[in-house]
Image (tube, rainbow, N blue to C red; front, side):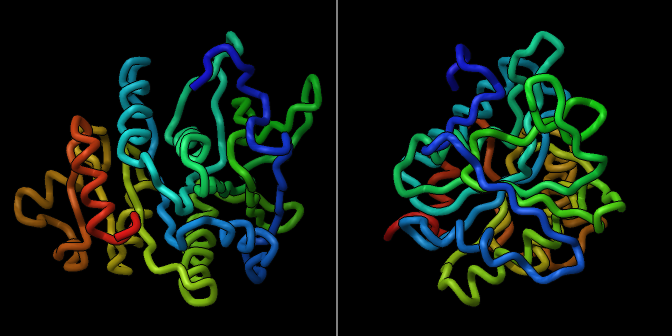
Amino acid sequence: MDQNSSPYTVSVEGGKIPLVIMNANDGLPAAFALMGTNVEMKVAIRLGGGCKGMGVEDKKQMIDFFLSAFSGYQGLVWSGATRQVDKNGQLDPMVTDVPGLIAAANPGCIALGTLPRVDLLTLQKDLRLVLDEWGTIPNPTQSGILIVQNGPDGKLDWNGDVDIYLRIMENWRDYAKFSRLGLIAWNGGTITKEEIEKSAARKWPTILVRGSGRVTDEIIAKIVNGYEDLPDYFRGEHVMIVPKEDPPYLRRKLWNAGFFPA
């Protein structure tokens, strides 16, 4: 990650990012779904989670972990489409910055993002699009962003895009011949828990990064201790645990699950 560049600079090829806005109850937008079909290999991984409780060095290790594990990846990788900038105007790296970095390092890979409209969208200062009262901005490293809204006057919670992105992934499988769909969870809270549960219930490869913190580690502890308070769909080889200190292990899991060429 180039620490010298502005956190507001669009870094994808062409210097512009299509923004697609849809109502949560409408049909899926074909224009956005088609953006994901130009990958070299028809596979898709969603990165879910957050970085609460992580320090600067922890976040650097997170980025290094994923870049190492995804070296040579030619599929689609995506996440939420937000970016955080601190009060000094410096990037505060999050999980949502990882897909763009992976795509930039791997030709043939595409990074996309989704986000719910939780507040009135505003243009501020030098025409920066701001998503909420905390100054959250769209992530400028993703090749396309889908904004999900509850009509022109309504608002959604921060999980308002989860069911939409799951449906898009299913459409890629059913209509665009994507052979593998999966989720990797890092840290996170209640929304990440929902994502993990819905991925595991679909029997998709659901990878939990041990040591990343919060809800991901809470679920791992329950699995290790005998699936206490967990539904039966957490049982099975589709749910995998990888240590955050071992990116080659994550890479092997992805390879074995069909996310890299045989």
